Image (cartoon, rainbow, N blue to C red):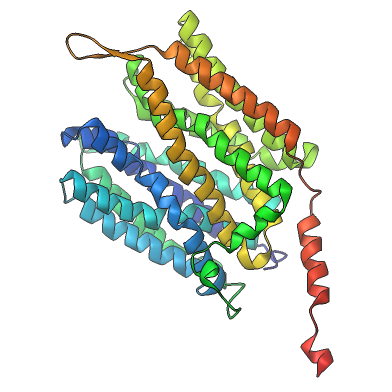
Length: 427
């Protein structure tokens, strides 16, 4: 779809979409562990339920296929958000570990595909270089989610963290997001009516992009990089709690707060150094994060922990959002939503699952139990291993990944279109 007519009205609608979509998750998922703990679930049950996020990414390519071939993307988004709202209400009314897992898995199968879908919608109506200026409102929404508990405590004098009220807050946000999706710019399925196979039905057509060696290298690197990234994403709160931090959610939200400012720098950096080096800067900051945790642990300097938190915006904005821009450039128009879904499947799906497992083992190997049954963590070897792994992946990515010049994929698409016979000419 042409984005030449990108207007201020479209920018506002797309920005509101990002704000709501990324506020929807943290308002209930960030305090979910405390809620599960209050339901007296054991560690294995909690880990399985928390992994519902990664499992939810399995549906991303399939939902992308639906948006690419069958229904307008904004309508698909509205339906997914409505289902998310309904399922969160159901989740708030069950307490059995099995039922909580099943319902929240259903929630994530509806919600996680919206990350790729919202990216595809935004980039269908705006130049990809402008995407970070729209995506930054997702960071603002993430930070705003932390205000739910603050407002509840200050205005109504109640604490909602660790209660089912957070699930109702998520449901309400999802309902508003569903309504807002219907006001988005019309995004029709670009491949509607084209012949489909079982591969298309499963949303796996985007696998053909792996024939491009550089795209394949990028996807493998993206998967591997998620493994060290996951230890902060999934276990950062465990570390901060062990270090005596009381307001963990607000503390970690400083990373998203900084992200709001770093995100708007992405277009400038892309113009100056190109996509590959912008993503490389993001990976360099990943090394800085874990090196900061390590130095802070060795020398007991708490300020270094804040450095590790604040660089989150550089990591996420430059590497992960840069990766979305790369995929948008490489994917043909008839599979852009599928390709974004495939990216999230590889990263926040498979990569997060493997990362959670490996990092869980790493932390477990450096944890001992006292006679009183309390856990004692030795974080120095954990951050040493994570820093080394991040540094190796940084060097690997810098050496083996080479981004094609901007516009190459678009030119290729244009060349292919000239090979297609013109029905009018034939007539």
